[in-house]
Image 1: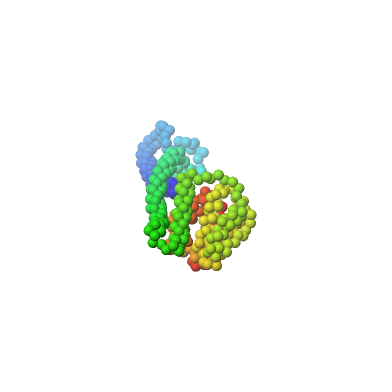
Image 2 (image 1 turned 90 degrees about the horizontal axis):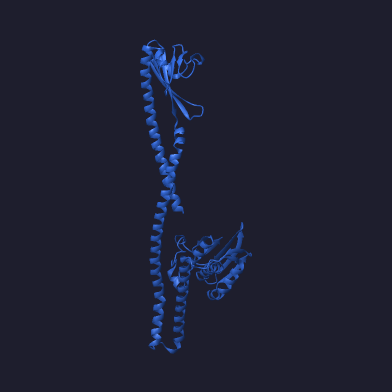
Length: 399
């Protein structure tokens, strides 16, 4: 959506800028042409009046020009739109003063509405009188208003075309990105599955060939069991992510008490917490949210499991359920190894691990936080990560 908006805004801005430059250039050009034309017409009319006097003026048909004949004292002798004796003295008019002093003068004056301006061109005759021609000229505001409909139509067409192009290019980019992610995901899955499979195969081969002492059989069987469990967890996470990607996950919403949900998650993780010597505490209040129960549980379980696994011995995890300004939120605070600043934007990527050696020790699949990201997105929730390396991490989910 942001890509569409950016492309459309850029296209529209470029169109408006281009239209403005073209309109301004054309307006300036035609204004100069109109002014020169008025000057030529004034000179020709002045020659005719000088020889034929008022007879020439009275025989002229009504046209685009207003013609006014003014005596040296400023009084009007003739005007083709008004009775001359009703008109005020024109000696103070800029174009008349210039014509009386230098032989020719011109000026322009705007109407009260600023939508039209009058162009004036005045020529002094041999007897000292002045012949003035004037004509209306639309201002740039009027031109813009008159052209508003066609420009609006063109602008709408530009917007539609830019949206279509943006949609097509974005869809193409998304397809390429999705394909790249799929290839990367397949490669990572193959690698992650190979590791426990090789371990299982190696341990089983030793047992099969009788190369394990009887007292060590239980140890090797435990190794095989742990690696098999790791594979099962990995496959389960892959299935969940695939269903989320394809939109096949059950997204039926119902009322979920987040505090009670957190109690259940903490109880499930109690054996792990005891093994890691981590104290887990639940604080906060009873908060109800309209959500997808199994995804909310999976989201909280993965965050809490990471907080326990990537913690220091004798460390702690505090889960807080709160509601701020009508919005529920879950915060999980640990005293663990922390996350470097450079890694915080990537921890929700699939198979991304901050500390690969430590991840191998604790048996993580590398998909837990990706599931968290998907679940948060389906609930229109925002994920926030605050961490200090060596001191701990706080992950907050704001609904």
